[in-house]
Image (tube, rainbow, N blue to C red; front, side, top):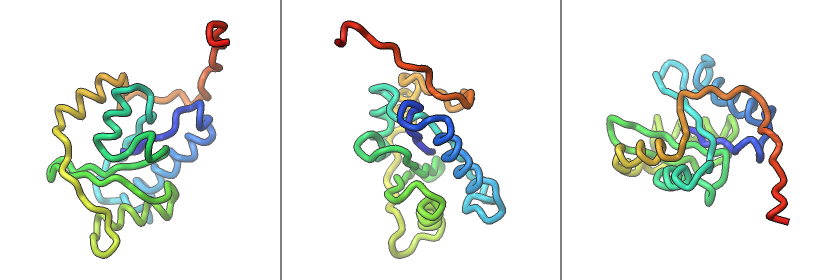
Length: 147
């Protein structure tokens, strides 16, 4: 699960670059996720207080920065947040550490209660099935009250 910067911090071209990176790692023959049956999903990071709590429950969020990634194994009820660069090499090193373990591998933590995570996700207003329209964020309206 990846948490990408919102469109005010990363325009459409920037987001498309992150999505292309994730897609290549999930589907290309030389990608670390290819043939493993992994599901790669992404969300806008930090959109609400509940979303931030959801991210913090998984060891990512505003304090860590965006973009970020966490691997979740629902069967084993474990997760591991990425602590490296959100780049092709960084993602591959992180996921190889998850797959093969060994020295330098990311630690696995007990997954917080799933119902708690799902409730926070639902309360945040995020949808993991809502498609992004590929456009930049709409312009922010100036508020005269803030001046």
